[in-house]
Length: 81
Image (tube, rainbow, N blue to C red):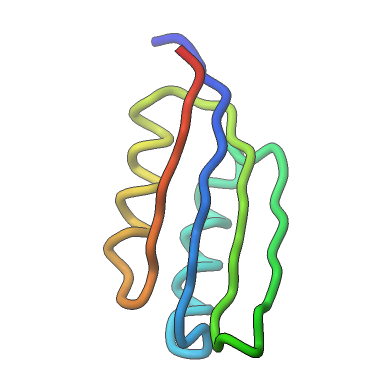
């Protein structure tokens, strides 16, 4: 299966409740993460994380699926063709 480049946007509400699980998931998928930027938005009580990924659609789908299953976590992705 061919690798694709993509961006994953993650919006986390109530970060303190899911931070450990979220970071564990990201760590387990670290081999496909090229870059990561996280911005806490304290005024709105949330955090925004953007990931650049390079992996198969199955690998990227596994990552986004696990993240999206966490409570208070919204995930969207865009991939190359």
